[in-house]
Structure formats: C-alpha cells, structure tokens
Amino acid sequence: MTGLPSEATGIHTRLLKCTLEVEASRAYWAHGGSVGGTTARKAFEEYWFGARSLGRIEVLLANLRARYDAYPSALQALGAWEEMDPDTRRLICHWHVQLSDPLYRAFTGSFLVARHAGSRPTVTHDLAVAWVGEQSSGRWNMATRIQFASKLLSSAYGAASLRRTATRGRSRSPG
Image (cartoon, rainbow, N blue to C red; front, side, top):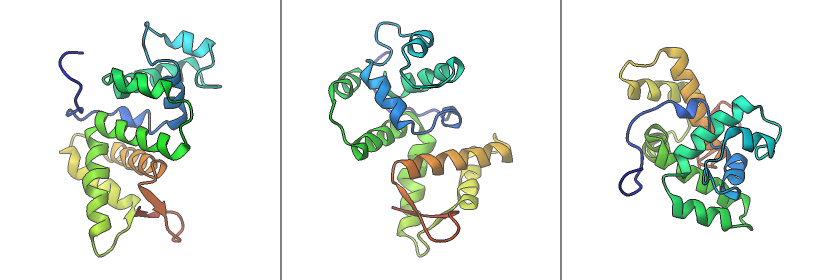
C-alpha cells in the first residue's frame, strides 16, 4: 500500500463473491487480518471461518484484505475490541464495504437515501436492477446486473439499511 488509506474509487465485482460477511469479518479481525502473511490454508486448518471450504476461504480472505488491510490501525482496534454488540459489528462491516466498494457506497449513500426521501420510499429488486444498469455503462449483461442488485440489497439489508415490508418480501423500505 502506498500513501494514506482512502476509499476505493474503481468499480469492481468483489461484492458478487463476498457480501457483508459480518461473522467472517469478526473472525478476520480477531486473527489480526493478514498480518504475518496469513494463508488460506492456515485459516482453513485453524477453522477461522467455520465449516467453509478452502476455496471459499481463499475468496473470503482476498475480499476481507481489500476491505480491512488498507486501514491497519482500525484493523488492530477491531481485533482488540472483544465485547462488540452485533449491531456495532454490522455497522462497521457496512462502513468498510462502503469504503472498499464505490458501487455499494453509491447504492447506500445516494440511491437508498433518494428513495427514502421520495414519495414512494420503497426499493424493489427491479428498481435495484435498473439502478445497477444505469451505473454499468453497458459493461454488465442482465444476469450480472441481477446478481449485483441481489448482492447490494442483501448487504444493505444485512447492515439494517433496509427493512422488509409486508408485500411478499420483495419490496424493501430504506431504514
């Protein structure tokens, strides 16, 4: 890493493979992140992430490194914070996904805020897919847009930025 830590600005697809991951993040913090050259094999053998495959742990580690290792002081503080309540963990994970993913940052920081302030403060999967399409400049096909929308909604819901409404679980309200 060069320079001071800063938020990611380049659009990427890491969210497609790793959403909020609150409990995996907690395990990563507790083990000091990738300090000391932690390998996926070591994390697998020491059961850091529970009953997950070595392949899944490799993906998790790559994504968690991108989220947390850019902020070594924060990572150290998170690792030392033993009595953290679940809401605080979710919020910290949400912030770090925002810092490391410009699409998620725009979704939660602009799109959801605008929907909440509008006359119809709901978010549907179809609206999220359309929004992703507007952001993609044609670089993603419909299947990728749908997957992105699902991951964005799932992450925002997991961070308590959304709440389910009574309409068959498909419509969500910014919370």
